[in-house]
Length: 321
Image 1 (cartoon, rainbow, N blue to C red):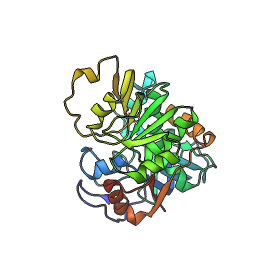
Image 2: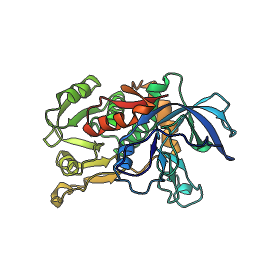
Image 3: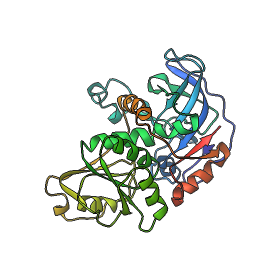
Image 4: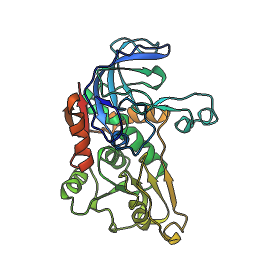
């Protein structure tokens, strides 16, 4: 499924079969999660994609050949971070997620909305047999970026999660496993999503623009809505952190300095590192994280994106090949 230009629907098409270069593996795609970042690319909010482009960066695949790390037939996951130079000041200091020359799967590199792809073997990860292909796919971005977002919140006990979609439904389970108290914030009146959050261990669920029942020690924002930043800061105890987990967000409205005062912290999350992936993919089956997914055929990719845009998905959408 090919994106020719932002604002256009994806089209079904035939592309030349990709060939693995040295250091790459050729992969046969089994499943690929649909991410809100894909929607930002389609809608032109991330405006420097390779075109034409095959989207998709939550890829579960079998090794078809190439490379040295993996055996043919081995199952691997391919995430958003697809390549770094390994030599810049960021890479050499354990911050490869900030590499200025980084290339991203399904953005600068063709991704997993296809039957085949090639990937840098350094940025592929073996997957636990605890997960079927369908259930493993959301771990590779919703899980990984969500986990990095949670880690950057520190050891906060009272944790607010704003926007209860794919990443949040995974990270809620991790946070509860760690002994944190989770407060879920959704659109006002979204009783189905609030009930879903409570099923997964949140102790409270309510309006994202309203107050929580008590102050938060940290807040994670997964919805791409800038107006949630002042709301989250307002809900925060002194010394707490707001961590924005998305790659794109609408403008943050003007707000009084007193919302930030009291040594509150506002920060973003950029991409992920291979260390994040290795740590989270080992943790997920130990929790155990259970992903809630809705399956779509590859040719239904536009339908999956439309469902995400309207906010009617419960958990994660996954394309199954």
